Picture 1 (tube, rainbow, N blue to C red):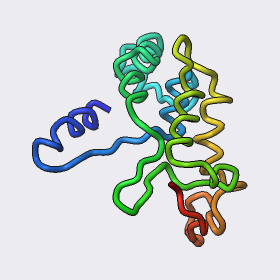
Picture 2 (tube, rainbow, N blue to C red):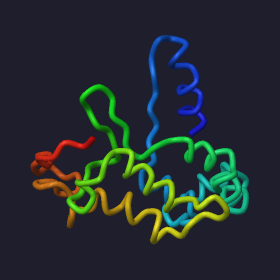
Picture 3 (cartoon, rainbow, N blue to C red):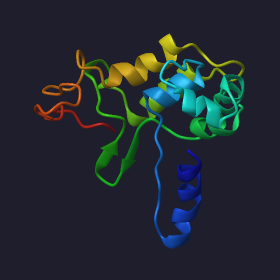
Length: 149
C-alpha cells in the first residue's frame, strides 16, 4: 500500500492519476477480518496487533482506504473489483460507494465483515455475477446490459 500511496501523490505531478479502489480484501481488513493476511504481512507491520491498528479506520492504511471508493467512472469506463452482480446493477455509482462506506465504517467503530464485504463480495460473486461471468476463470466475460450512472 505504501507504493500505491506514493504513486497516488506523484502521478498528478507528472500529469497522470492513480485511482485506488476498495475491494473485498480491503473491506475485510478494514473491518477486522484478517483471514487472508499472511504471517509475513502481519510481521511486516510488527505483528497482528499493530496490523489491526494500521488497518483500522483511524490507522495509517485503514484511513487511507476510507478516502477511496469501490467504484469509479473515468470517461466512459466504470472500474471496480471484478464486476457488478445483478442485485446491485440498479444502484448508481454514488449509491454503491455510499453503501461500501456505510457498511465499512459507521463513524465510531468498524462494522463487521458480514456487512461490509457483503457488498464487495456479492458484487463479484460467481452466483450473482454479471451474465456470463464465472468468477474470473477462462469463460465468457460478457458485461451486463445496464449502464451505471
